[in-house]
Image (cartoon, rainbow, N blue to C red; front, side, top):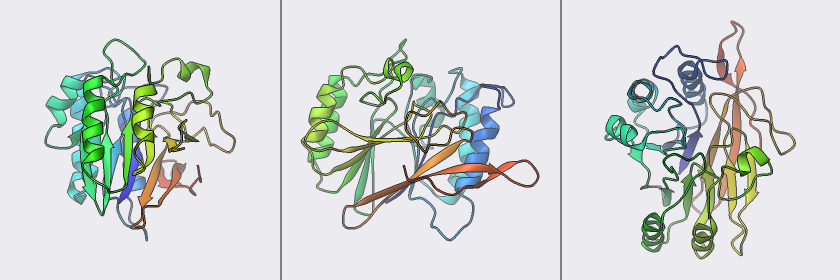
Length: 269
């Protein structure tokens, strides 16, 4: 299973609107164009957008999202999974994108792997929560198959070393961590929210890798060395037939005409 993860586009109802000094719709379009550009590597088997999809939580913002995905992704036949973040309106997200994409919580299987997505949105809060009902759903899904899997959610379930982000991470993550550590088939956890490439391991006997993703909009100051900050990017993950998982990060870079539309050398984080 080959996964392309993009995150935190923060779209607006105005397709030319500005957020953090750039146009979110244009930035996401450029990232999709670059990541899916023809090259020697195959297209992804799945595209994951890991939350904070719509900064103003508007119907117009989600309409812009569906138009971008319908233009860049759907014609290629790539399945989509969308996660709600703290900058999202889950009901509008479902109303606009149901039928176009899987919306967390959901499961996608491909090539002997599974992606299990969680909804950590908590109304009125910037931090996230996973309710008991969703934990029971995850436990059931984990017990229904022996295939290796990746679990994804918007909010990181541990501190990353940035006090600003650590205050708004997943609240009360211990039940989720205990559940994941009981399942040897969980090979990694993916998150958005932190606007930077980041890698670590969950506490517990499983030592499960956790990977953060750059934003397609703007980057926060990195807490790990060797991470670029000036350019949007995305993460690739590939699960092999022997249950091993590899990952890398790519970035946009300026082309000769000033448009950001090519991919830079991957970062191994």
